[in-house]
Every structure is written in structure tokens, then in C-alpha cells.
Length: 138
Image: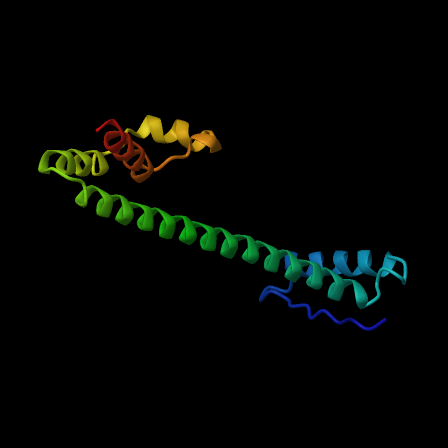
């Protein structure tokens, strides 16, 4: 049985605690069955770790792509709502529409809307609905 682990001695001749740990680890390793000491297990463990890291990376990238799509949709809807506000007849109607479009949203309303998927409506969607109501009431 060859010693694969190097040991070191301290300057005053005593073996360090790392050396005793190595000896204990070596004894534990050689008391395992031969099938468990096979070199296949470290490769299998490394493969599982790599697979786990790849899955985590995929999840992060998918989330970033979804967030980018949502940001793109929100920007497109806001620009469309701004265009509709600008095309309204009458200065007062278009100013009212733009003020509703650019009004800050309340944070507690945003938290409630994020909890309910059916109620997720952006400020631009609200303005579009209100501007369509204004046009239909004329």
C-alpha cells in the first residue's frame, strides 16, 4: 500500500494536524468496498455538478430573456399610448390623456397587481382604455 499523500513535519518534529487528518482519510478510503473506490464515481459526481450548474444558468438566462420581452412590450405599449394621446382631438383631451399616462403609480397598487395575474395592467393599458372610453362618450 503506497502512500499517495505527502506528509510534513513541523520544525520541532511533531506531525501537524493536517497529516493526522490525511492518515484518517486514507484509512477510511481503504476500508470502503472496491466498487466505491472506482474512479467512475468522481467523474459521475463532476458530471452531476456540471449539469446542475448548466440548469441554473439556463434558468437565469431564461428569466433575463423574459424580463427583456416584458420591458420591450411595456415600452411599445407606452409609445403607442403616447401616440394615441397625441392624436386625440382637442388640446384639453390630449393633455388629460398624457397626464394620466405619465402619472406615477402607487407602490401598493403595483404590489397587489403583481400578486394577481389577471390584474397585471400597465399604466399605458389603463390610459388606452380611458381614452377609448372618452372617444366613445363623444
